[in-house]
Image (cartoon, rainbow, N blue to C red; front, side, top):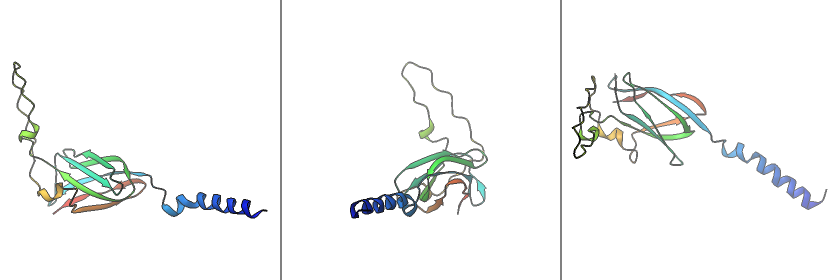
Amino acid sequence: MSPISSARSGVALAISFLPLVMGCGGTGDVSGQVRYKGKPLVCGTVQFEANDKTFKQGNINRDGSYSIEGVPVGETRVAVNSPNPKSGDFQPLQREGRPPAPPRPDIPGWFPIPPEYQDLSKPRLTYTVKSGSNTIDIDLK
């Protein structure tokens, strides 16, 4: 075998092992419960931001559960938002010449959470996502 073909074989072998050395990447599906001081949140969102800045979000259900598909594997920063359902952020726009929108329904059991859990730029919550299915319960203090 010539030195050139030997070098090419070595390069090809090294490239074939590169994904094993660097990690395969991939994604995982995440689900769990969100609680504050032991009580489940009844509405809001959970956001996961991966190291590559990929952002995934899921809604919090009335029982505090959430699920998010396709979160990149690895360390993630997590934020939880549960804004007041009666705030102006949730009020429908009033269009000129149209009747007013009906009032927003009550969401029984809603309570505020500390604002520091909502900021991904200063995360208080970090979790590691693995390939496949992940159960990550988020317990806010």
